[in-house]
Image 1 (cartoon, rainbow, N blue to C red):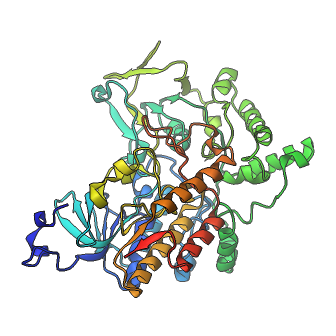
Image 2 (image 1 turned 60 degrees about the vertical axis):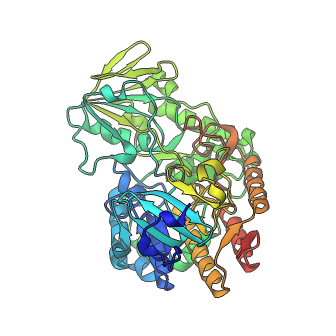
Image 3 (image 1 turned 135 degrees about the vertical axis):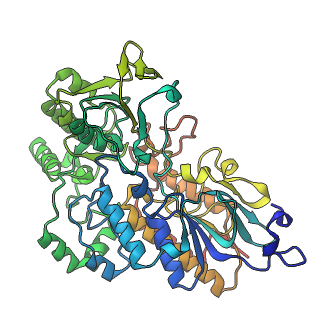
Length: 547
């Protein structure tokens, strides 16, 4: 990038940048961006955050669809860095809804006065590293230029909504919405004919709520989904107060868990083959009755051994056949793949919804959607008319929001070129060829396989400590070595290959995005990852080039 092309106010008479605008430019004002801003500011750094939305909240700002809810329990899905914050906020449900989580995000922004350093309704369009100045030049949608020493992508793992390329999308005369970009004002579905395309997590959450509101609902399913009951309920005051009385110990126990959550639920440490058929069923039933994503933690080998996994598969399949009254519909809703290789979904009355007289399921595997029409859509053999068409078609996970920004590193290399064969990082935090750039919960980190807020906190603290260490030791840049990147990619792949996760086409591999290279992106195991990150820092940031 040519420095001469930049705003003259940033330059001396020699055409060189006299100073940066800020120490750190952060993209995104979700839970990652907010904590990044707060921690760096507390350490004395100047920070500018850019956010495309009108306020904070990240994924919880955008995902306002009916039924949107977290699948990590409220007392765990919250910041742990500030004890007063932990004590003062009162959660109302076991699994918090989107409005409550967004209220929490706004409370945090108010409490720490974060908005004064966030520029809302401003999208980062490009960022380029200048090798002469050792600085990042960031262009935004308002045509402004911001120069920062460090550049942090805190854009979230599930924030780039995807819509399938179906013919005729522009022809539909009704209302069209994506669950990941739901209108702020909501949609009035009373008396409406609604079509929902997609039965992933957002679809599973939205479909029961939409069905209760609309006159007619047609669900278009590509792949049946394993889902277990959430068993959501109001949060008991005694339970909340008891946890608050020992929050530090509660957090420490969760930090030691593979997913950084569920220490009080995951109480078994044996193989599914080590118990009798009766005990196996009793334990799976116990987990089903308890509800939540830790259903698969009933035994240690369900996600490691297909012969163990099949027992959990069969259990859920039996539940579907028991719940859904129409055998043909039940058959369509019954998955055949490994349970858990796709993200396990938790639901409230999802399967029960298909017993409603106003709900119908269409299997697009046998009845593919041909096109969207002015009045609805057409499959291979039938035409449907709708007032509202909902795309519950998910996200370009983990890399989508990064790749949508024109990021240029050394020698003019773009992040799109660097990741053309799939994302490659060192520690899920940095990318060779892109000095002083960090990603929060990026590919190659535990991220989506953990309690995301806890992973975010660990990343933010590592990044901010790294920046402070660099200044203390008078280094201007840090950049991952290519050999460290390769070793890390091999490590992530080796961990995944010892499990059943890569065995099906999931968004963990990017399989939901046409043309995206299939690479298993998250790393399994939170505690081991934290130990490795700490070791890298303790060894003066081994695996990095420091200048």
